[in-house]
Length: 404
Ligand SMILES: Cc1cc2nc3c(=O)[nH]c(=O)nc-3n(C[C@H](O)[C@H](O)[C@H](O)COP(=O)(O)OP(=O)(O)OC[C@H]3O[C@@H](n4cnc5c(N)ncnc54)[C@H](O)[C@@H]3O)c2cc1C
Image (cartoon, rainbow, N blue to C red; front, top):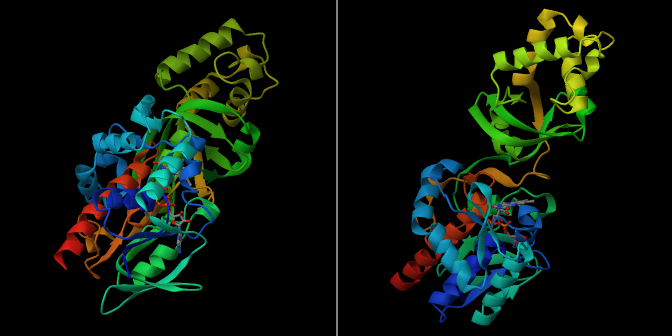
């Protein structure tokens, strides 16, 4: 019988194992990992650099059970996370928007630091061991894998969510459901958006800074940053950031391509160009103001005949061009799914857990990380929640085992 059995050797599971054994070396802590290595998803984060946390861990940056996220981050905020990783030898460096990376800029170094420490502390890690079922027993739990059943006093579900294609997992939902937990509908977030493709196809490969406003039946959100036009739709950091709203239905994404100018200023600039370059082809009216191909598509979408000269562009079209530069609209028709998503929205309802991440349905059962109904914005917020929930569970497990 192991004291603590952690299902999943990812961000939350590995950090929890290290925290537990650091505080209580006497406990037996076993990590069961489905893959042939621990931390495979963690090693891919932040484009291989691992956006490990954020200096501004504001609850507003979380969705789903936001109050629960707030409670977790109160227990283990940025300074605690920094100190924890420093103790493992991982120093932080900060980039724009409070995004924090390991100084090495290598996600694998974060995995290694956790892995080395877990080994040094005597955490037992069993690879290629996928958990299929967890059963409550008179004394603790039975954890059923394909070729063995393990007994444990406490069990932690740390299997993450479905995002990230093959690195994702839905196993946590079935395990928690079987223990009486409610699972809020899961859907991909921090994901590219599919749009009607007639226009985006012509713009494939173009990157442009824009103020992105998404509106759907779930609300409205505006983000600034670099948008990438793809043959299927839109990508880039601000698009990923607003993508969560797609689930609400009826989503439009509006790009303000000139956020530093008012519509009237844009109109005046177009009028000036039409006059100054009156003999030039209309198709080049926006050249030097906007990416050339993007400019030509905007002109076409505004009904301008590209065989005209700039001087022949009708005044009504000038207004349409100005409006389109301020609101280049796309109808979202889907997302690129869990395969490409960075995080899973939805998951195990947090009201059924104490602030220590212990289940209210089955004492001694805990859940941490992305399997819970908390998803954060891009910027290090999801890993921050993984570390924070691991810390809360560490204290909860020690308290629970001590009280028995
Ligand atoms: C491409 C990509 C980039 C990302 N970049 C960032 C970033 O830079 N910053 C950020 O904050 N967040 C990022 N995220 C999100 C972040 O990786 C996750 O939110 C975080 O890893 C969740 O931690 P977790 O421990 O809950 O799950 P995971 O890290 O996914 O760990 C779960 C572990 O459980 C194992 N497992 C699954 N099922 C079973 C089973 N049945 N039995 C045994 N083991 C099982 C898995 O193999 C995995 O090792 C990114 C996600 C992706 C996909």
